[in-house]
Amino acid sequence: MAGCAALLGAVAAWAILALVYGMQSAGPAVRLTLPGSLGQIGLPAVAGSADASRPLVVIDAGHGGHDPGASGRFGGKEKAVTLALALAVRNALLEKGGVRVALTRADDRFLVLEERAGIARRLGADAFVSIHADASEAEEASGATIYTLSDRGSDAIANRLALRENRADTVNGVALNDKSDVVSSILVDLARRQMRARSQRFSALVLREGQGRLRFHSDPEREAAFIVLKSLDLPSLLIEAGYISNSGDARDLNDPAWRAAFGKSIASAIQIYLARQEPAAIAP
Image (cartoon, rainbow, N blue to C red; front, side, top):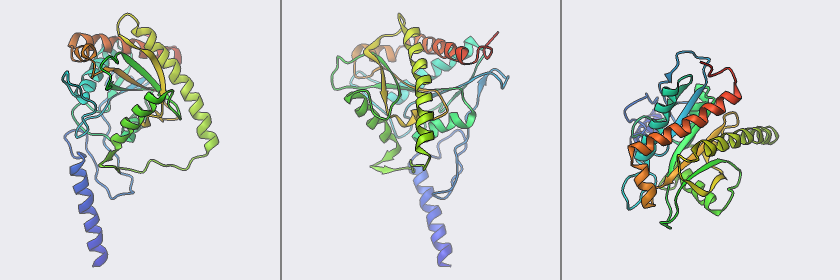
């Protein structure tokens, strides 16, 4: 009886945590399991071509639910901005055709960081793009920045930003899940180098296709140890679309016309990247 009581207590405690952390929000089903088991969130719908051989892109709207992300005195919360931008990229990709698209979240819900890239891996995605909006105490800071994975950030700003974003997996300083896996360091290092090179080529295309359409930071391509970029088999980018703390950027980020232009720019880079990876993948 004591064992049963302990088990029931653990189940009740886990259910309470799930409610507190937003795991039971509306949308894809969440299977509640005891800590340490293999429960996974439901996969999102895939839109676009019905041909399963077409490349699949997963767009991740940063933050959500109880995690609002950055905010600025010019209005708007990062979680709302990122969702609007993710939808703009998805719509532009679907308009261009030839690819399949999924969103990690299509509404205001919280996802653990590993769940975001995990969705892309489980769907067998060909590319992963996480969209965010930056913030700075210096109001003059402005422009978009593109991040690829590095064990260490390319500068102190990148390191601070990665630390801030990675903390989305904690509530009141308590980690929500175990981030460590024992994997051969040699194999991991080799895979990381290969994927980093592919992601950097992807980043260069985003910068190229955005010229004349988007305003970029003076140092637009950076590296940082974002958790959502750590897939060893998936080219991944994190795009800070602008500074929500800057008046000009905040105006753009909240402008539907600018969002549409952002979506078309990122979609164009994605399609070119995929075409170069698989020449026949997005043929008419």
